[in-house]
Structures are given as C-alpha cells and as structure tokens.
Image (cartoon, rainbow, N blue to C red; front, side, top):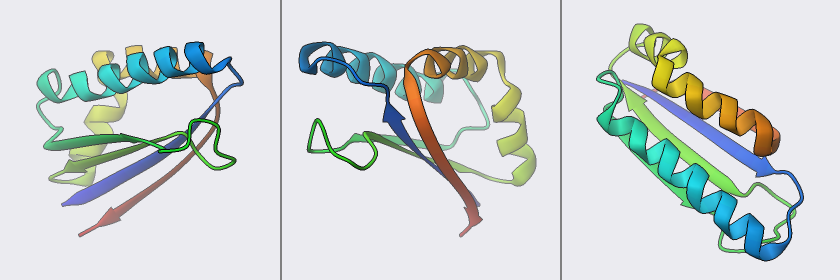
Length: 99
C-alpha cells in the first residue's frame, strides 16, 4: 500500500472567509473517495488553530500501488480539486511512502 500525505497552507484570508474556504476544500477532497476507484482511504483534517504558522489542512490517502496513485494524480475529478487548490493554496508539502 502507498500512503500519500499532503499538507496545505492557505493564502491569507479574513477568519470567516478562511473557515468557508477550508470547509469547501475539505469537502472537495473528501468527495474524491466516491469518484476515484483507485482511492482506497481518504482522511482530511484541519489544524485546530485557525491562524497557525504551520499548515492549515492535512490530506491522508491510501492506494494499493504507485500505479494507482499515478492514476489518481491525473484523474479528471482530482484535477478539478488541483485547479481549486491553485487558487487558494500558498504552500504545499507532500510525501508518499509504502506501508
């Protein structure tokens, strides 16, 4: 199995707008589970501190193989989320590992 972990730091938003953007992004990410067959597990968590110096959102996903992860990366539904992320994300970090 492959564990794909991504951390997102959003651009600067007023608190109320940031909460709304985080909720929309979180729902989009979680919605991929029902749309992409290769995606076996999906968990999304928001940082408990709204204006943390660290990252704002964590995505943890599992795939059976690197090939399945690669299929996910280019899947049209994932690309919609990537496009949205490009509008709202200031920084991103990712790691993929076998477990």
